[in-house]
Image (cartoon, rainbow over all chains, first blue to last red; front, side):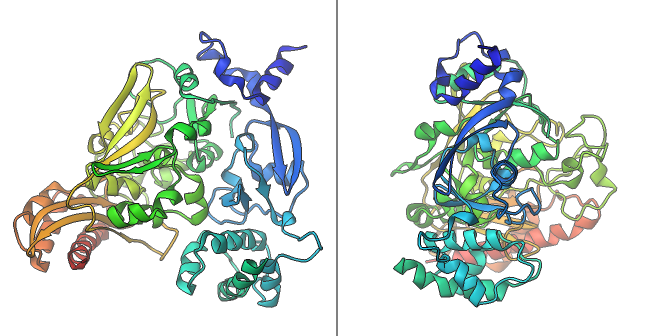
Length: 190
Length: 336
């Protein structure tokens, strides 16, 4: 077994507190730790991936897993296009280090029901014509679902405030708000 | 993004072992960076403003530093609590509204779900000449190189606490609320634990390459906000270029203890206008013991900005900052 392989295995186990005490500084900047083995649960499926330590969750979804529904807009946490659910909370996958992910991830590909039906929020976006170019839409839909589940979709004003992290350059905002209002009671019934 | 090695630590002992022992204050771009929410770190890694050789993931420490505790004596917040948790906490909303509001008005819902309180305190300025490394002159990134903002567009820059070396504006909101309420920061380092008053936590602009009192490797573990008769009647007013998801042009954190219309105690901190979270003690002194009238509020606001220094395009902040403080004082005076 090579040293690199050993360190990869060590990284994948939770026993990191047992590193030798004298290895305080140099061990932590060891070049072999620039690659990590990460375990993911994405849309209900478990995966194990070898990643560059720098890889974001966004790039991992798109390039390693082929889940291109999650979009890269600004890549700096300013537009919300890359929004996914992490442990049920909405987060920005462009600012999430893939190696640090420890909770299940839901992307737009994971919303379809077992019966093949669209999620009520997806259906509402179609019926309310809540998109034009569609690039921000996956992020809008995931953010909207979380907005309802957080209890922040009680009024139009609250929806506007709590959806402000998702920009739409086509300015479909009134339709997006209407879609959220349409989907909210249907989500309760699911 | 430069290559780095990633390490996740599982407990406080591992954190202590990972800390590098070297003297002097923590530099702007240290070789070891802690990763909590990552909202700032990932952004600045991509911009190559930060280029650590090691990133230490501390999220497992949430077990130890992830609680909100409200007692008679005050409010204790773990450093790894997410911003959204505090913003949505009904006890904090009722007893310390300025704290909950400062967090609710910051960033976006997604970022508030990710970003932690400890990381929030360490957010970096949005000065474009700091964030864009193609600008050679930035005393924060390269001490002694100059300050591009003094002659380039500087509408968003600070007017209080500035120096010839740096006129960047502190971008956060939460730290203003904490400063007004006299909070302290709890930390862990190789030699033990310590507590630092938030008002003294941030350094001044004479040495912009050092931003806080933290030592290399020192970890923020929590925040302590002492209870007071002024915490309940408190507010955070944030004025910005758009209604949501934007940094402050001017903001005011105000906490007030009113007795028969007269100001018994008042705490004021200003944001968007200053190099660091700015406690306005001169303004507090003018208000104390007097009725809370518009004229007194205006006099206090003038005192708060008496030392303001414009760099050109940001001159409007001197007027806007005063109006923001007056409005915040009068609004909080109306609260039941």
